[in-house]
Image (cartoon, rainbow, N blue to C red; front, side, top):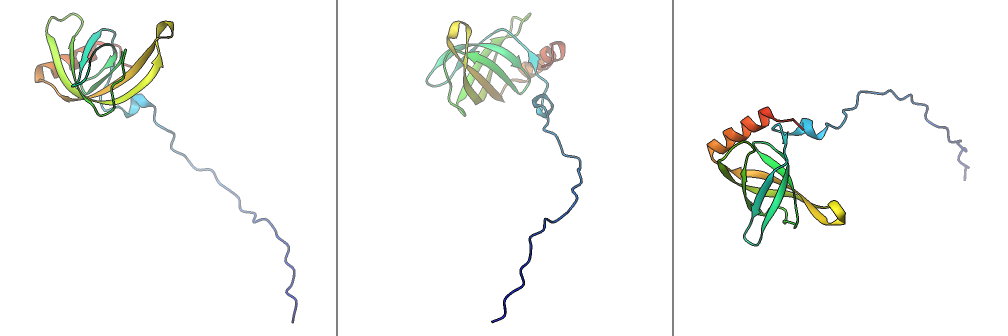
Length: 138
């Protein structure tokens, strides 16, 4: 039997080059519609619950608010609100896409609720577009 030659391990000396790596896009850049900061009450209602909420931001396709109780993701909800400076009461329907527990003032639990609008009247859409165009973009 012939012994095999002993080979010493040698690191492969390959030089690496850096290439452009795509950086993650900030959340605001991925949004399909501009959102305006907002701070006014909304009423959220589903088959099992009716809750008040405090709006944080709104667009023509969705909104984010703080609510005192959780809503399950993908729950269909009705949202009633009046835009500041207007008298018309708006009603839209949407799907809950986020419901995360957060800490409110005084340690009371709140829920960060995000809703994607699925139904609204053309007049409501026009009012939202106008409101967002005049508001502080977030």
